[in-house]
Length: 106
Image 1: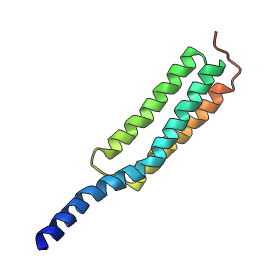
Image 2: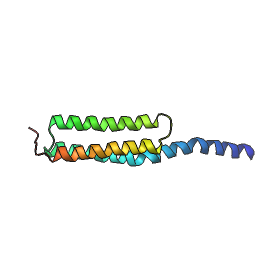
Image 3: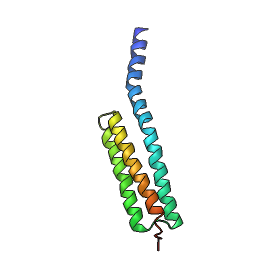
């Protein structure tokens, strides 16, 4: 009985931090995905030219690198999360600005 309890406790202890990481980045991941879709929509509609698209995709990669770096130690602090969300806010404004700047893809 004790071995079963200890095994269950050990499995739970190892699994819970992984769930916490997944939950803490779910919002960030979903937002990244939505922003990627917005960029693709701009490409499809001709609102973004190649140079704008490349610049926006590079910004998306930068935000993703921030997330990977924050998760290197196994957990994301509130400060790291706030930094990533700020970077996503900046990127979102860039997407809006580039999609509506009246430049068209050739």
